[in-house]
Image (cartoon, rainbow, N blue to C red; front, side, top):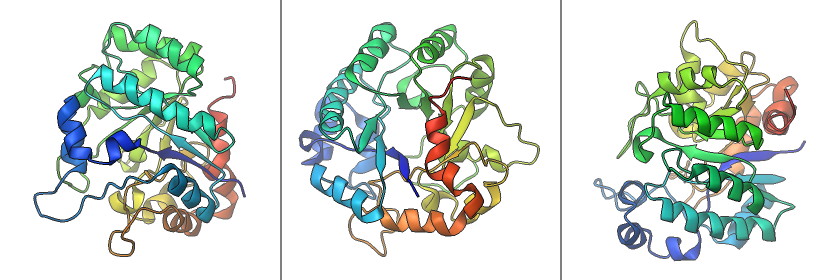
Length: 290
């Protein structure tokens, strides 16, 4: 069975060699807090694999393709620099890798940046985080951003936090209701709402939108396997496999990041009749016409 991990991240050596120093140097204070030394003195859950390890972990987990997402950087200069590094890695291994670009909807030149991203070989945008990047899901500018993404056939991956869910150091909440309202206002744009859409999919009476998909990134940390079992029938055509690699989702079991355990966990939780769509088909359907 084909497997696409649609939610991964990767950072070049210029970042990974000393993440905290790099973050301080480029003004990415939020990311630096997330990946740096924790107040409880426990090691960060963020790992920084080399290119070779990234590909080896894919092989070991039997993941055919990984989608490297951009981060919701605070500064556009960071987005531009990391986009260039990531697409170089992706283009060198285009048979195994794809990538979403980092573009801030609040930037006045987002149109140029989105078109450049398409020319560079990116296949989507995100993750986005409204509070960290300083944009409004319901603003006219964000609607313009969505309209152009639809024209470019760029799905938008949106990080949504669960205000009811598990807390973790430096957790930043998102405007979930506004994100859903914006998706409803932009029906031609396809969205992936990460982390089970901030947990809203579990609420009684939740209304599913035709143009919104949901990934299960970091599910082991946030909701456990029961979430996949509960949602597989409701979201049979909308759930997308994504791990959030290289987060160390099993820190008591593995000292470093790996892909296999998360995939095995998902395989156990998802019914065979839904597996083909969940592990690859639903993500690929994002690029089909309405």
